[in-house]
Image (cartoon, rainbow, N blue to C red; front, side, top):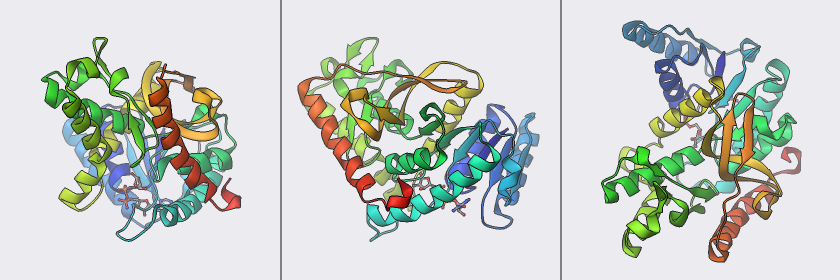
Amino acid sequence: MITIIGAGKVGTSAAAFMMIKELDDILLIDIIENKPQGEALDLSHAASILGLSVSITGSNDFKDMAGSDIVVVTAGFPRKPGMTREELLTKNAGIIADIAEKIKEYAPNAIVLLTTNPLDAVTYVMYKKLGFPRERVIGFSGVLDAGRLAYYASKKLGVSPASITPIVLGMHGQAMFPVPRLSTVMGAPLTTLLSEEELKEITEETVKAGATVTKLRGYSSNYGPGSGLAVMVEAIKKDQHKAFIASVYLQGEYGYNDLVLEVPIILGGKGFEKIIELPLTEEEKKGLDESAQAVKNLIEKLPPEYK
Ligand code: APR
């Protein structure tokens, strides 16, 4: 069973994409009474119409996640106008620490994916509070950032995004670090296919993509995160050993320790199996260092009980 904690916009979109892929039965959990049950009922009607063989249920009781092999955490607040990243961090870190206790109690063998922002620092809290092997605690968002880079590059190139391997490293947020030299079409780096000006445009569009969606429609993205979560859960369920960019706890990789950053991983049935260390130029490593520093600054601001 796949449990999704947080039956908000991201959680329900993830459930819809997972449902369409018939990955497994899905349980939605939320603290708001009746909300996860109502969302599950609506999705169940959709499953019936589409002829899908999955059961979707909702609950306010964390006990119901017992036995889940995958827990996806989308609970938490998005940033409100005037709210600093640090304020959001303290608020969401508290929610994540509480949820970690529930996962430890009811689904101690689960692989945990999460989307709550600020993503890298929150993933750090989840990892520390769970005490699970790092392979089983994975922050989602790299797939989203990379998917957005592929989208913007595809528009310039006239090539399908599916034929582009996009590389974005570092922090999920303003300080993210797209790497066009290592993003390729059949091995050809984007730096050989697009002009300086075009590269600048696509990297800028990628960094501000989330803000652009929020500005246009008034609330943050959910279909991008929902679809990304579904393909990652598929890779776990089907033991696909597939490559993704994701936020994981680093132990020396890329020269960083005790830090969570977006890096390429190989994902399979037991969680992530490998971190791929890309050969960076001196200048690229400097860019990644700046991005890493932004995550370090957030982690330093965490109250001690969350570290
Ligand atoms: N346990 C379970 N659910 C919770 C908890 C908790 N402790 N705290 C909050 N929630 C639920 C809320 O009740 C709400 O239904 O999490 C849900 C969040 O949904 P939305 O407000 O719609 O937010 P969403 O757009 O889905 O984003 C969720 O993912 O991408 C990130 O920045 C985003 O941190 C945010 C998270």
